[in-house]
Length: 229
Ligand SMILES: NC(=O)c1ccc[n+]([C@@H]2O[C@H](COP(=O)([O-])OP(=O)(O)OC[C@H]3O[C@@H](n4cnc5c(N)ncnc54)[C@H](OP(=O)(O)O)[C@@H]3O)[C@@H](O)[C@H]2O)c1
Image (cartoon, rainbow, N blue to C red; front, side, top):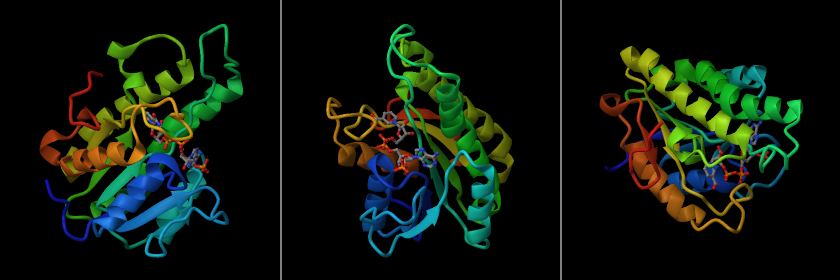
């Protein structure tokens, strides 16, 4: 499906990896692109046409400041992409400190919640608003291979968050979906990943374009396969 004309898309975690590539591909097809980064002083090698805003998703007050900065701007597509992968490995191998649990759940679950909540006025100002949660197949209970407990739990939770937001926001016709990008070569995915970031993101953008009120609550892979919850 073609992207809507004049699609304004906001992507969290646009400094690198999947978020940066989403921004570049969306900009290349003519979207109005806003990205958030944690460090606005760093050079993220983004075109000048992309608006860059500061946001650490763990900090609700920064989501509120972002909303204030974007007051009056309709956001058609919000992509909650920012994420971390703390304490890799099995229960005996990895650190699994309390701090890792807090960072993982705050960044990957509470972060998207606060961003969506702060930007609701921007979303409701759009004629066809949608929210894409970048989740992971690692959070699917049918893909439980053990290990990586914080990451898996956080991605299961953010998929659940998407389902419940889809229900609550349906009367406002805000479509919400969760998407699995595949295992992608990024800092998080590492060079061992089979998928390059441009292919994953091209698929993700198609999936996000296909998100509408009539299929809200979906959980799909970057290729369009239904992902079990
Ligand atoms: N790569 C994969 O194989 C894969 C697979 C499934 C799902 N995913 C998901 O896809 C998303 C992007 O992953 P990626 O592979 O692109 O990871 P990445 O290369 O490690 O990039 C992560 C991005 O998230 C940002 N970020 C981290 N913590 C943040 C915070 N507290 N506030 C705001 N931004 C924050 C980072 O910003 P800084 O530069 O400031 O650190 C960076 O822009 C994540 O949600 C991840 O879980 C990835």
